[in-house]
Image (cartoon, rainbow, N blue to C red; front, side):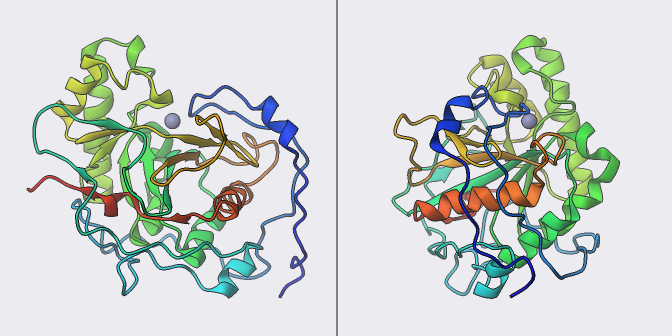
Length: 309
Ligand SMILES: [Zn+2]
């Protein structure tokens, strides 16, 4: 296939799990273990930074990357081989009756998984620090759906980076102005953290974020945070069941297994935060862990009914 096409050897060990960092999201957590084979394509030009011309609508309907059957299209086998990955199963069609139905007003729900019997999980990627063109190339090739929770002050130096990812049908959501720990700041500051990010992301990406995720998951279930979210526009608070580190996920479940409908947290991170691994290496490891357990990746917004306008 190419000069990197060699059998990838699984070199990390289960014992490394014991060394995983704390379970909170958005930390520079990492596991130990030797690096695996590079997930670097041998060919292909860097992704263009062209702005999204057709921003996905806020309503959670079929996305730009939907296949004829309604589910996200799986990239072809050659594309997966290029990244030294085994293809994931294709996602089933998006459910007609959405398991999550969001209301236009009132308290917002807080959830970390979606009730479904589909053998799917949902991948979310937070913050936005690492802006690796190779990752745009990877998602363009593989067509794995992701939901991005962006922090304004972390992405404002290059809002454009995320536009090709958005153009693939991926939605952008709210992850505050500057990654504040919400329970440590007063209600008015919580409000500005969410509302100011909402305004900036809406202006940049052409659609108001439907979902909010507090940094570290902190304060998610407090009345102050719920009120602030309601005041700013997002209609749900989204947490997670698994948190991707470098080579494996941290699981909240004791059996360390994915379950149908789990929401997985990852981050836009690069070698500085991944012990030298790249964003595409980390993401390839994430996909491999999902593939090993037989799950497809579905688009979170395909399982959510947005409020009627
Ligand atoms: Zn974060």
